[in-house]
Length: 227
Figure 1 (cartoon, rainbow, N blue to C red):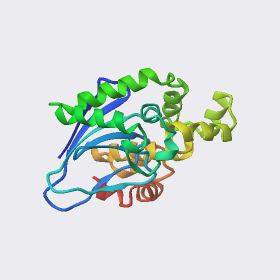
Figure 2 (figure 1 turned 90 degrees about the vertical axis):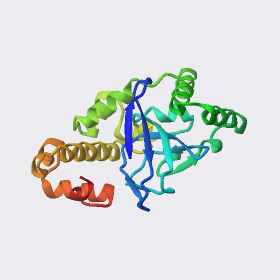
Figure 3 (figure 1 turned 30 degrees about the vertical axis):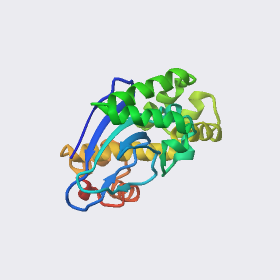
Figure 4 (figure 1 turned 120 degrees about the vertical axis):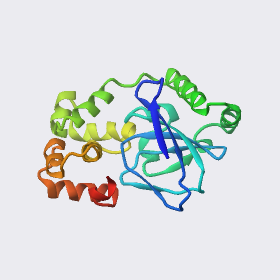
């Protein structure tokens, strides 16, 4: 079972998942986000994925997560996003051990662990340098299908400079992020019952075959299997 709610933090979502009784892996789609996950007395950081991640666990195991919008999570965890790409890293490997122990003790005693996670993330964002306003703007432009070359021109950067900037905050370059954002939009439309041919047009694919290839490449399964 999976459920989520908007976080009290801007640009974040709180989610909870319970591992099914059947021994099946859960397919987590790439979304350009970094997550902080509380599970079995440990805090993990899930980096931005370039392809679907198959999450496994004991039947009935519970997970609580705080998912940050693309470009936000690196400021919370304090490391460049590319260092976390396609990785699941204990928070204790990134923060001082004493700080992590104190935080896990608070989480273990909390009636609602997600509240403690939100408070911690808010404190980290308050202490960090302000988020570059260009970060959410780049995401918005990519979601709108604006070519990377045009975005670079609008920001006064070369495509190479834009790529380097994106690596630090998103974990990968703008072209990869654009593919992932477009794929998630397509899956969302398909799950709402939109015909695949129409999904391809709305999401900005050349045709339905292009949609099928991209979804399979990024998730490992056909679009029909995802919905």
